[in-house]
Length: 580
Image 1 (spheres, helix red, strand yellow):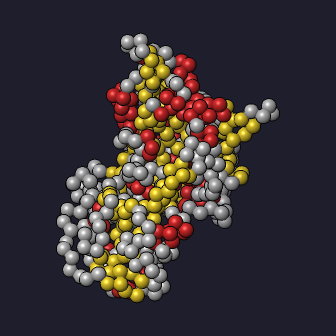
Image 2 (cartoon, rainbow, N blue to C red):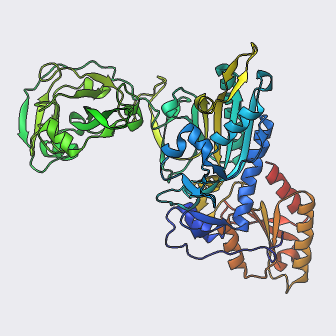
Image 3 (cartoon, rainbow, N blue to C red):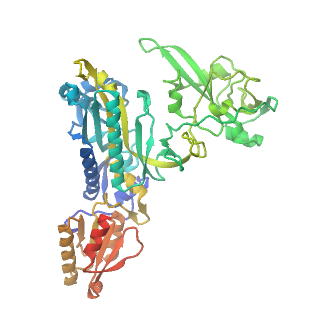
């Protein structure tokens, strides 16, 4: 490709609505252009990156034995009604009607359609296992699309679905995909972690997220620097303290804390450590009749240390709390006789269930709300001042320095961007859609399923978040729109420059190098600035002065200065670097 034929549309400034680095740089580099809220044109330069991602994914999926197909973007609602997701999914699911008033959805994922294919095509255990995948456009009607390709409404995803005869086979298929994903992300040349993830309502332990490490990442990744342990924040366990509960030393006393409604403010007022305070979180669960009307409500009080935060996923897995909600102000006043800000487990107006975090369960002489505005209680102790809690559980997010669950060190936390997820589904969809096969005994069995996704268009944005400087993007070789750019300086004025550039260009093309020749006759400074912004990793500057000395200049995008290389050696140098 020659730059004079290509569409290069760089910008000096990013649009005002661009928030994160990847959004700003991809817009400035002319890789994407906004069409609507969360909807982007993939411009030629950006599309080349996306195609690089797709090619690597496709190669490794095929290598792992998966079979490619394509499922429609617009899907009949009947399939989604079979699984209940047509009604259960929120407004993120875009529902439309055709001219005959029939319901359709614009797919955010394809579990229903692929399960429908499987139940029609797979009849016998002899046809299993199977793994079907697609690289297809998706749509999720995000309430607040933001961050460019990081959280757009329309996006491209690779989604794969495995079908097996039993759990053991399904777990084997899962491991095949987990290994394939590691090969894929290794080839991208990005720093990433595969972390254990929560499996949601389905349960089980087979779920991993693939997170590209980036300071701007929305997800917190928990890991142990001295072992292989890694998990997302939802999954990471906070171990129970090893030391037993200390004996009570202080008398219980109500103290005035006017206007101090947070643990931080109370600790500062009383001159104590934040970890001696206990915060109260009030939840409720509703028991409903067959018509969906609430017939009974249970109120819960969760107690966490003042310097800890509640983990909603962990709480939702506790007995009785699967469908919890936060209590209303009315429910809180009914049980505590006080508005939020000064709540505690002592002097309750109505009985409720108390759940203490593991750390709170071993605390002594702690501080909590007095259920009276402007007052707290200090010197509180279990057993002496209030009964032991109804339940003790891991309720909190882990923090740096917590013991690693594998017992091999302490935990650290870094930020990441989720770009892939492998997940064991079990029979959730096959049961809902009656997708069965005949086993070796001729009896029908539900297929065991797994699903495996990679955000094709999110991945380039994640790569930019990890690889950039003040000049622009720095693409890894595997993802760059072009591997090499040849910058011909004033080729119209210097025939020798044009001839040398054309010769090197043809030589690299013949060797299979993804190269672009910048023959636009731009000023050198403007030309270099464009390619630094776009982020092509290898650049060769070809100028008349250098050619007179028999050299050209080579510079990697991460290097601060160019190196002179003999004209006769430059092709071999580039080929060597690209193979490294």
